[in-house]
Amino acid sequence: MTRYRFVTPHRTGKWYTDLRTAQRHACEIGAGFLDEMTGRFVAYVETMLEVMHGEEATPDAVA
Image (cartoon, rainbow, N blue to C red; front, top):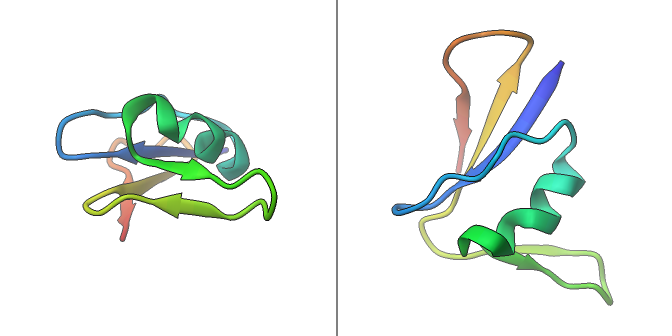
């Protein structure tokens, strides 16, 4: 199972099973916002997306 979360220099988000849900909750930690009109996610500066595949111990960071 692939899981996603957003990380800022000061906060770490929860793991979510799909990217869209992680994007919707990113504003809770100050990682970015989801433009409801266009459906486009805008990440703030220094925000990183972490992706975990399966049950691996270390997530992949995506800039």
